[in-house]
Image (cartoon, rainbow, N blue to C red; front, side):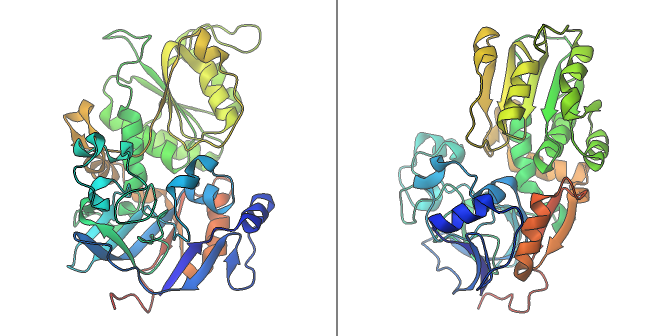
Length: 401
């Protein structure tokens, strides 16, 4: 079967890091990514299923992996060679259409008793990401035994499968995994430190790619306490989507501090700092500059949620200390206490339908057009796009055999 595979290759990662454009090389190579013909992965154990991807998205963490920008933190919790792709809508052998919850926790790994986090449904906090009967891998798409969605077949455990409602199109279903991440980020800090019950709560969302736009939609749908959402978007189509999905106002990156100052009644200090700020800021970018901007506009005692996967960066944390800002990471999904324990994925299905998230799917490609697909995804904002995905529905060899 066809699959796009990432090999462990330091020279190839180095070349990817400095490349300004994606070019197909010998053997269908694109940096460390290679189009290969491999057997479908074997079922690792009981409870596992073989799946046929229908569509699989390309996300920021995929791009960071392929072009060599991802943090070395991940090295012990991935196994090579791996097939990327964790934003997947797929068919099971027993005829179900599903999306996968990609985190590979204790249950998928066959570990008993499960760690305390997995026992509570918080697989994102699993302490056994290198144990059990499969190789290290924090998620499907980073483990050599499971395969991933950038292929014609991969395997997943029953605990990872979420059935897709019949009326939800594939184009929306492929957005459910990033929407679940967005739901978790939007709900992760319900009580901003500098507000009291009944007061207005301004939320700032930095970044208007797939994750940022889904966070805006999630805040609008699930956070009754948020009275204003200021979105930060670079490109015209992003600003339009942000308004449609619930942003009260939209600022360009260079205008963020002014927008927050006006919205919150703060005043500017000598070096661009604000006297006050927004009680809740969600950074969906994760660069040094976006985190610096986020710290600058978070109110004293407020909450800064880091939702975008950060790159290695040097950041001045003085405002975190002096203003007693709470910095919280938001990684993947799970039961949401603020919503009565409903799972992020259940809420994401609801959000995908209500917000018509299929509107965010801008382009699809076949696996053999990987170079074009990755180039498009890497330049999505500049090209007027949001989500780019692989579409395997028309592949001739799409079968379980």
